[in-house]
Length: 316
Ligand code: AMP
Ligand code: MG
Image 1 (cartoon, rainbow, N blue to C red):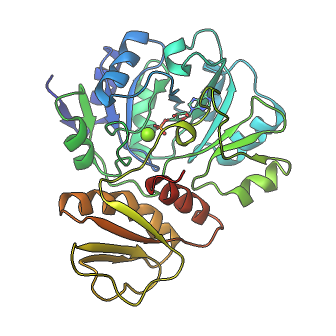
Image 2: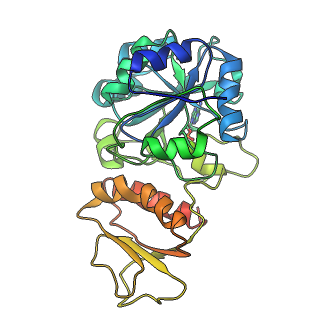
């Protein structure tokens, strides 16, 4: 398959409306989209990524007013979250309409809905005839892509079109809140923080693990995610030095230890989130065998960074 690379949202939408898979930028990470109401097109996403079919997809809408195109019930909590955080880096799980095919929801009676704030994504979605089902635009199991070249590296030749944009400004996948249950449950941490959610929904449950045999409600709950090939070592405080051989890398908020073959000193947690997945990929490309990652404070986006680090280390 030839992958067309374009800067024009309208052209990318034409490909999607024809039933092709289209990668596009969002503020969280790049997504790989297909027409959510066309099950054959959606099957193309699973093929291109090598994604397990029991992992549901998030449906993206052009504006907050379109949530009702895929959700059959929007309760009071969901309404409040939509009003405050849409468009933005938040996904809400709601009871689905019958028009949402099973392949999108992985057989669940619910659907995850998000309205991205990214201007190019918004324009692309406006030109799509239907809502767009889209997981992250990476080969399944690898870290989510935060720039178009990484998408091309993973999926070039396997998808119809790639809408080229700037690197994602957040760099971590969306926060997911399940509003189909009472009280609502946090399924995945992201840039919309637990603290911000609690201001609107004080009794929100923070769930972390999925019981054996239970269908996955969120990606990180069943599958190993966000993993580079290098071994991840989690660090609370930086050691004075790292061994030079085999080459080891450092990323964190503190000054890098001596001996790091490669290092990234992040100014704040927003920068840490933005550069993390790209750093994992660069380290793999450069043959780094171990990446020492400093755990940030457990507050704001720090919780989401910690979550991705723990999963990358294979402990999640
Ligand atoms: P990804 O972009 O790979 O992180 O995929 C999107 C994730 O959103 C999925 O893996 C799901 O776990 C989550 N999601 C999508 N739809 C639902 C749903 N109906 N219920 C719970 N989680 C969902
Ligand atoms: Mg993903």
